[in-house]
Length: 304
Ligand SMILES: C[S@@+](CC[C@H](N)C(=O)[O-])C[C@H]1O[C@@H](n2cnc3c(N)ncnc32)[C@H](O)[C@@H]1O
Image (cartoon, rainbow, N blue to C red; front, top):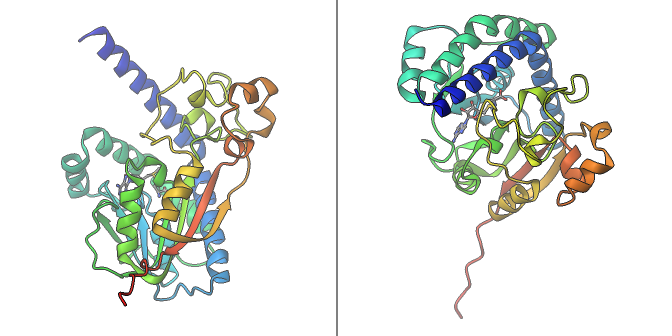
């Protein structure tokens, strides 16, 4: 094995060790954070006069916990979760076998570790914080990519997504396909983790900048020297204005909601100077929710 391959393997091993440590420490926090997002979604939908009961919802990139699909399904929505990863809560040989074939060994092993070590405490906590009963029966989760949706035109009333768009190589293609499957009055509620935020590089060491600032990885390392590039999943590196532009090309933007600042105390005048090409908002705001409706079709010119 070459020295480069060996170094790569060691770095991967260290990454996985830190992921296990982080999973041990925080799997219950994830459940609480997820429920807080869901509560906010319900409040915002209420303002838009959406009633979840019977609503046809698409959850893009529902992930291995399928938590947003599960919560919406438990509230009476008719929701389908899609993900390129083979997602299905619980253990089954066929699940890991399908995953191995579709997503490769690394992805299958990661999910196996998650399912055996963290899924139970995660769902126990989600049940504890959730004021209604969680309905695991009848969850509709399918392996599918957002850029190639196997649904007829105008199927959905609502498209939700949590921390997925920053992982898409082709955001425009995804939005184009979403617009196709949305009814004309449908809306998106898409949360994107902002790449330029302190945690936006997806380094595990910066997952909790306020309570657990890293002593090893410098703040905003991914925008500076990028000396610690090992992260759990690939990110497209898009800035907020690029997403805004893409949404405006495909949708009528109804609301653009920043989700709050993090890391303000760590943005020293020296770092601010070094990162002068970014606005303060880009460096401090953790993410944004895009609420948008399919743009009405361009008016065709009438011939006189
Ligand atoms: C960071 S995870 C977020 C998962 C989940 N939404 C959550 O909040 O826990 C990103 C997910 O997006 C999925 N994903 C990436 N590209 C996708 C695509 N083109 N279509 C559908 N899902 C995709 C990944 O497989 C992964 O499960």
